Length: 170
Image (cartoon, rainbow, N blue to C red; front, side, top):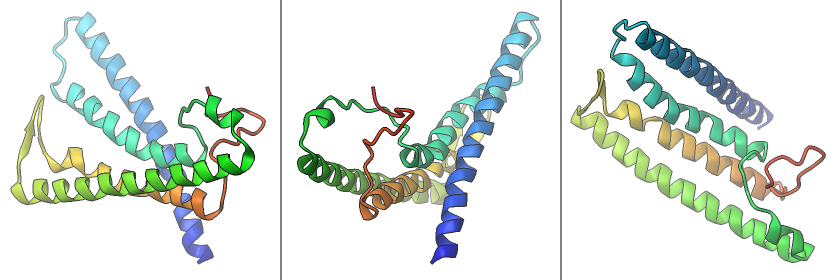
């Protein structure tokens, strides 16, 4: 079991690193695109399409790590005024809703991805890309986000404990 947990932890960190690399690549491509346009040099058609797809991959790679690090933005006004016991109960209910919601989205995305793979449909933009390429990160990303909320629920950890750096809260 410890091996599985270590591998899973490495997967989450690796996806976070991949998200960072995606941001750097997107920035470089946008900079390249703007420079080429400024110099009136024709830009390859693939650049905009790759940046568009990168946004989706970035979100799905970073989301599980953000849940783990409590990096998603939330408003903690209600949380601050609730009694501790009620707050814990509310947190656990929120985790369950998040888990169920993420699994519904993951199941739906899996179904739609399967249809896209079997239909061989293409997404026609600057370049032709199989439709499933834009859908494949969704089942994985939302499943991992659900796993992270499940981990919080099982370990009885608080998403709203801000710690010393106050991450996540607004």
